[in-house]
Length: 258
Image 1: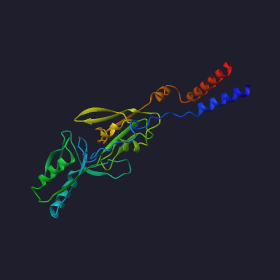
Image 2 (image 1 turned 180 degrees about the horizontal axis):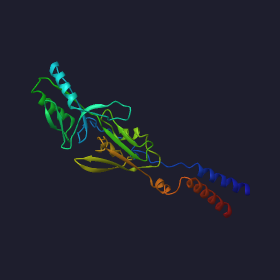
Image 3 (image 1 turned 45 degrees about the vertical axis):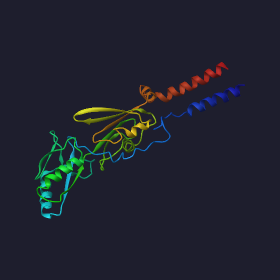
């Protein structure tokens, strides 16, 4: 009889010790995630204050190209936009009035304008000097920040200026098992106002959300679940002790009752 009780207690202890944290799965609302056509084509970059823009010109007029390139070199400023040890770049900062100032062209208002709109305006102004200007614009300081219950929180500079919320989470080392996927917040500055977008990563609706493609300076905050918040009130030293005591007390109660 005693042997059976000890065996029963051993099984309970084994089952309790081998329990794993339940994790909510992304997109659990559907087995098949619908693909939204032309989602990538709808994305465009919009410039903001303090953005650093690199401008390049290609034209068959080599003399003007050299003059423009020299003027650009003298007018632009050097910025360190990446982590230490990485190269610095020269560009034009979007000032507090929303403008950049380019050689020969003067001030251009770019805030909240798309890259295509700004490029077309620069091309039109350059046509006063040359016939065939080809202009390329690149944002040098596209940065997103991932905070909260992820493996490697931090700020990350994105070289290709285009990233989804899931790619950003991947760069941050993925979400921890203790994260609350139903309560993710994206903080975005737009037109001088701060906007908070609530996201549920267990739903496929996120693929059609305005937060799917991130914009420069977006902040993603992933909250821990309630279990982690509750255990955070205790010292890490006492958590395994409390778990062990709870298991032993449960086993002893079962043993005494029988």
